Image 1 (cartoon, rainbow over the protein chains, first blue to last red):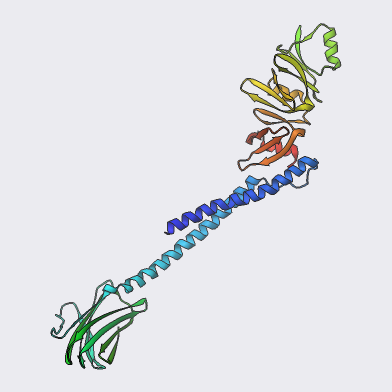
Image 2 (cartoon, rainbow over the protein chains, first blue to last red; image 1 turned 180 degrees about the vertical axis):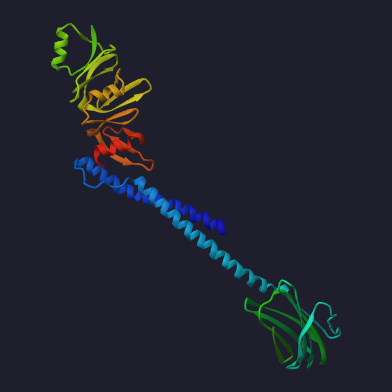
Length: 213
Length: 146
């Protein structure tokens, strides 16, 4: 796309001197024919149209080179920001598992527990695994109660300085359940300070948990 | 002895030479011409007939291969002379070489059109177009003061 824009710009830059040449040529030819008809030679000669063309072409190409390199630089910077935003916008990044029977547990290994506690009726543990090149993987293991039958939703928002992304998962419960288990995996994120928000909508009750990362 | 006379029909030198028994032979390899002011007529052939073409009527002269063609308002004439020879006898005030193959009568230029390729296109009276080539570009500009 950038190449196409640059090519269009280049052709416009080529066309511009031609337009200037044609406009100047009109006046130059009128001037020349006036001299031819009158025979009076003016004191100052007008520069020939091809000289004007060459000058305008050189100036236009210089301006095009400046603007083009500026544009390419701008696109690169925008791409870098865009890549970061795209990366955090990937919905696959957040994977939510909910179960009434499976009690999720970390099997140790690479993940380290960085936070745990209970807030707004949600018991949680936050684990993190960070690679040497600052790629972070988070796992939240949570437990909450469901007050009765109905649709329940777990929503997770991952917000950092480079952007944010949300994902949600729901399940239907047929009765009140004091122990519903949930595991949220947030994978392959470039480390950046921010928050992980977890919202549990169980019946009419909405519980919200905010974790600093 | 026959000699090619690049002289006007009423030039006293022509009469003097004819009195001496020297005839005008356009095919002769000897040429006599008047230096400076230029001639008023140049010899030209049309339909195997010899004419003296009034230089005031010449629009341009072009060289096409081995032929030199004199273009006037009332038609074309062939000349047996080379462009260089004609340029020497024609008035420099009125005639100018604009390319290796053309001499134009400046007074017969109707319009000058510039080109992007360091050239001019001359629109002559009668509708002919003659190019001023790059080699003669500055000579032409200097001559016309443009």
